[in-house]
Length: 201
Image (cartoon, rainbow, N blue to C red; front, side):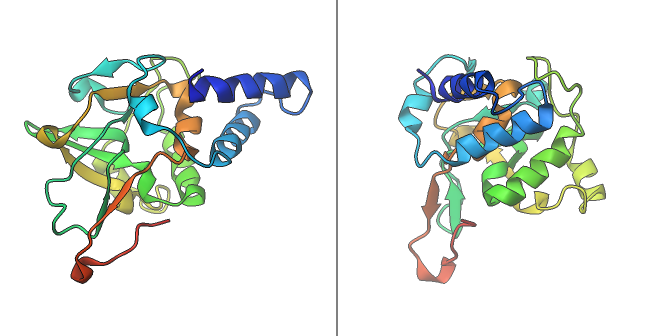
């Protein structure tokens, strides 16, 4: 059973026992986040080899803005970066010919990540967690509201299509809160001491 399905099954069981009310959006969000955060490790290879519940795209385009994706990445400037995330979790913001700008939530520790995600939820086109749900946001809006979107500066990265090493895996909105807290990040740290800087967590 896929990891998101396992968490949803656990939530359904907890609801039967009266521990949570899944109809309460805030309560459900908090439960899913805490459950995902408690998971010590995930099998990234299994995630990337699982076709469902993801849709797989060799490449994505402007229609993907505001949706959530996972993929494998090999940074172009890894020789001069102190570290980078090889397994990004990204909301694309804007596209150009060679790639796209996006928010990679892994660049914040869990508490700050949840705070930014709560702010991003206010920019969603609906609150139904259905397949049409996405964020209506761009880089300009983030810059105009640095207090509301606290931490976004650390998360906005540019990704080049020719350095993406897997298909793009679309994350269903009903799984955003689970994906948010799962330990899926894969930090690649530069061994050159002059670039030494630890990942955020």
